[in-house]
Structure formats: C-alpha cells, structure tokens
Length: 244
Image 1 (cartoon, rainbow, N blue to C red):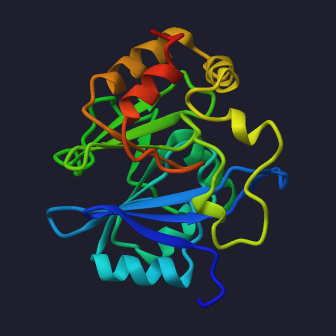
Image 2 (image 1 turned 45 degrees about the horizontal axis):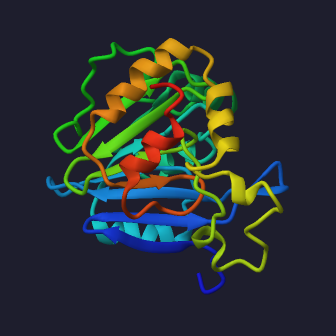
C-alpha cells in the first residue's frame, strides 16, 4: 500500500474518487478514475473503472457495504469481474456491449442490469439519489450519471479534461504529451471535433445530451483528466455546443 499510485480523495461530502495513472495504448496519459458515492440509505454506489487495490478496498469498507457496481461504458469493463468477486451481494450493471465483452473472458460473471438491453425506463434502485442516462448514439455506448445531492455529473468517455494531473500525482511518469494533453479539455476545438466524430448517431446524441443539459450540476468527475470542481455546466455547454 505504501507504494500505491492510487490517489483517494473526498471531492465533496460522501463522494470519493480513486485516481490512478493510465496511458491509452501505453502511450497517451489520460488517467483512470473510479468514484464511490455513499448513499443516504447507508450503502455505497461505485463507478468501477480502476483496479480494486488494497487502498481502494479499505476505503470502500470504511464507507459501508457496496450495494451497486456500475460500468460506465462499453470499454470501461476491465475490473467489473474483480469487483463482482469481492462484492457478490452488490448489483452489477453495465452497458450490454461491456457485458458481452466480459462474458467472453469470464462467462460466470452475472449482471443484474444492462443498459441497451433493458427497457429505457428500468429502475435499478439508486434513482432516488442518482440519475442515469444511456447514450446509444455514442461510439462507446456511454452512461452518464448525476449525483443529485452534490450536483455532480459523472462520466467516462463523454468528456475529457486533460492533463490528468491528479491521476499522475503519485507517479514518476509524465502526465502530459505535447499538444495532445493541452487540447483535450472542454474548451478545446480538438475535443469538440472528437466528440462530434465519435457520435455514431447524431440525433440520438442530441436527444440524450439535452437530457444531461436539463440536469442540475456544477461539478464534473470524468474518468480521464482532472475533476472540474465548479462551472461544470458551462464546460459541458461549450464542449457540446455543436449538438445544440
């Protein structure tokens, strides 16, 4: 644990992040992050996107019993089986595309919900505190979440905010790549072009982005890059303005 590169932080009351270095294709530092929310009911909801290392497991145990484990999109699936094994009583929910991939490697992992397969109005049990919106028009089949109490938007690949300074703060590796790192944030033209290009169904994206636009949030916790601590709605509006 002493050599762990995981940075654990209570971003706001009852919302904890677990940030780690991660390089896409082993070359581009974008960082990785899981987020845990302590629910008013006493259980814990986890967006699981980083390894369940000793530090993460210890903090989750302190927060309370894990009741929900969610995968945020089709490519954030690597550690879902690990979390399921540790917390067999929790509900495990992910996009159907992620489930299909996990099932090829670990077919004995059972899921309790599937975005993209379940009825769009399906309730999983945490909706009193956390909203969810599935993006079938996104290349990675994204799911965005709103923690209503803290006005926090959580997402995986919908929005980047590089460089991943916090995620690399305990690493000897660099958090930046010339040009790319400084142009992958909500106010960058490059990022605008990227989110437009990976929208496989523009009309579906417009529909679901309007849902997010109607949510009340000020903070954004991305899986890749630094947390946007305030004015998150303005950052969201700027990045996706081509869709509006």
